[in-house]
Structures are given as C-alpha cells and as structure tokens.
Length: 166
Picture 1: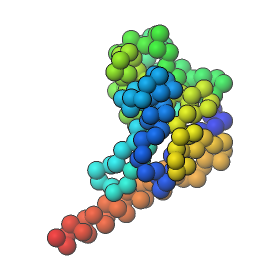
Picture 2: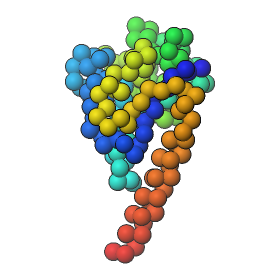
Picture 3: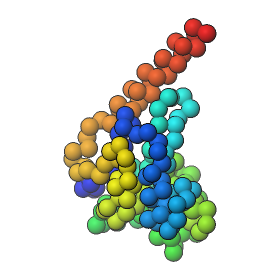
Picture 4: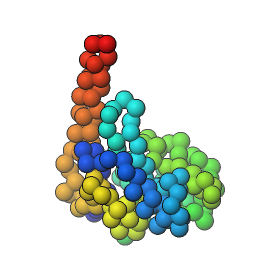
C-alpha cells in the first residue's frame, strides 16, 4: 500500500512540460521528453492540458505479466518499479497497462514508467503551477480524477453546442 502518492491536479496544469524535462534528466541525464516517465499534453477533445503518469496500481497487472520478473513493488516507496537489467523489452507490460503509462526507452529499449524517484519525485520540484503534488495517500482522496472526468464532459458538451451553432 502506498503511503504517499503522486497527484496531478488538471485545473492547475499548463502543459509546460517541465515535469518531462526534469524526469528525463533525473533518469537519463539528458533533457529528452521521449525518455520521461511522465507525459504532458492537450487532449484533442478538451481545451485543457494534463500530465499523465503511472498510478502505481494496488493490483498492478504489469507486475504479474512480466516474464522476467523485472517489475515489482518497491517496499520502501510502494511504487511499482522496473529493473532495467532484467527487462527484455518484450512490451507485454505496455500492452496490459490499462492507462498506457508504460513505454519503451528509445535509447535502452527497455520499459520505463514512473518509480516516484525513490520517494522524492523530481517532477514535483519543477512543476511551476503546483499541479503535481506528492502527498500522503490518505489525503489524496480528493476525487481529482472524478473532477477531471467532469471537466472533460463539460468541455465536450460545450464543444458540441458550439459546433451546432456553426
């Protein structure tokens, strides 16, 4: 069970991509968003940005599917981590992740995902708006995901109304 969790507040995100740069530099030693374990972008259906990262699932399907046991839960942080020495780049974890938060490192050809930086997420330090927060898991039950879905639905409805007026 996670004691702390990385929370993304969609209302605060401006998709500046500082989180991607901080993450890629921390893990790969270079500013390369393709090597980042967090992604920032604008959803095409909505007029607002969002950062997406691993949700550190309690019952992580990626952990169970890995044929080399390269994916496991770090007992110190509670994060699901990938041992790049064991990973063979088979992409099975990518295929089963329901949120699409695992990808291949383009240089090392191994799976990468958020590992919470060992309990001190670099992305949080460089988030200029405070949209990324590393908080106590018990305090994170703020239904931020529900708020996000409601915002998407409202904006989708507004887009449909605007389209009908054209």
